[in-house]
Image 1 (cartoon, rainbow, N blue to C red):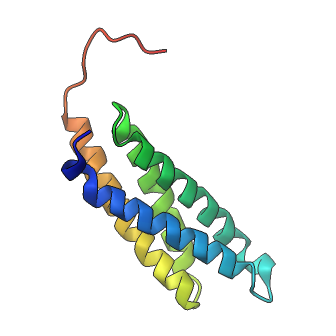
Image 2: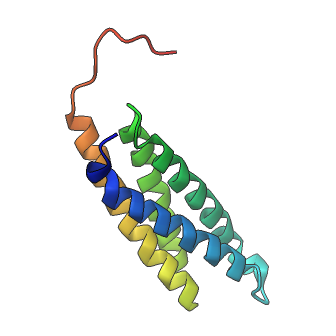
Length: 121
């Protein structure tokens, strides 16, 4: 693993996962939890994929995982931005930053040649 190569993405994923965890818990405290259901669901998915992406930073298919992470972070950021609560706005910002970092890393990984002849299971 090249820590300096992945450091900004790791930090963005950690920040995003923490913001999503906080946002989902705060959303559950709202009077109209049903209105926050999509936000909560996306927060949970986003936090989980961010943590998975961090785990994959040392693996060959990091680009694939980071690509999916970017998509989910973007969707979560859009949903959170729809809500006026400060915690949703903070989460939306963290999601946007994470999506950008994941896409940067995904693009860099796609440009890197893969080892040929390796068996895929």
